[in-house]
Amino acid sequence: MNAEFIEALSQLEKEKGISKEVLIEAIEAALISGYKRNFHSAQNVRVDIDRDSGRVRVFARKTVVEEVMDPRLEISLDAAQEISPSYELDDIVEIEVTPADFGRIAAQTAKQVVTQRIREAERSIIYEEFVDREEDIVTGVVQRSDNRNYYIDLGRVEALLPHAETMPGERFKHNDRVKAYITRVEKSTKGPQVFVSRTHPGLLKRLFELEVPEIYEGIVEIRSVAREAGHRSKIAVATRDEQVDPVGACVGHRGMRVQTVVNELRGEKIDIVRWSEEPVEFVSNALSPSKVVSVDIKEEEKVARVVVPDHQLSLAIGKEGQNARLAAKLTGWKIDIKSESEAVKTAEEEPESEEATAESEWIEDHEVVTGDAAEQEADVADETEATGETGSGGT
Image (cartoon, one colour):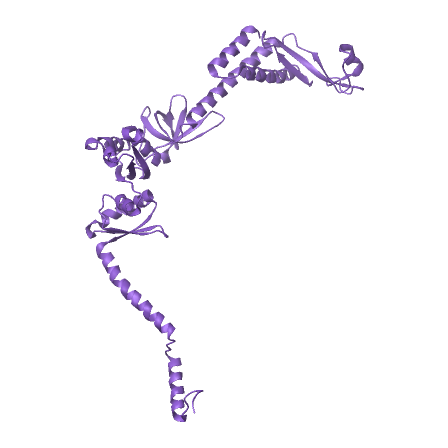
């Protein structure tokens, strides 16, 4: 190695952000292994690279002892003091043992170490870039697929889109462009591994952020999302500006904004509702497109009992309970839906139930007896009447 090599390391430090000193230390450590392997040496050695000239030297490190047992690792006190009178027992003496052709080995080893460190540094940079983009949306090109995953080219890294994270019936071909949501980024021996999804609720949120400037600017906020990918989704939106309609902003002129999102999600139906701090209003909005007659909130049980018009019961529940299920996810409340006629019938039955409960309590309080006990009590009364007894206080 020479001064040009040291200059090249300085240039790498500027371009790749890899410390020159770290590289030199890594090369020195690799050269120790290379020396022992190529020269069959079991010595304790140190490799030194001159930071200016690039000259490489190898030193055998030996401990000063009174009696030498292993000449590869030890040196006598007399021999050490011949080198320098200042040496004492247990000191370490360094003796240069650089082989004549060690420069070739050093150059080859240095190249391998630098190449490896550059690769590691680039992987680390890519990892840091993508780990900061977790929960973000990316666009890539499908490169290939196997039985479990699609492999998406994101430019500097290849992402994995599991088949389980694609929407029902969704299939991609080579070179198809795909928008996906980064769920996690992991380190691996082959570099950073990026996992993406097309079914995650976060994808829906990010797509609206791309299409609705008011969301990007913070005027409109998506407060919650409930999604059954490929079928139907609900989002609840709120605004910090009373003059802005959050629902209208997300729908767009003639539905253009929401339609763009629907197209990206292959026709998935999307309900946009207004978020509210009031549970009654929020639950009522969440059941859209169904109309709601009344909402009764049970705070302790986190249950909302909802009454809807008879002709809209099936609409409120949805196909296979989908609308009610999504509304429950969106609001965080367990929702019990009844039609008006069912609610009236239940209300008529409740007073009778309350009257029966009151009668039962009266019977318990007055110790009313029935059956065999009542007959025994009647026999005692007859016997008392026949003898003229009136109780313990009688005469």
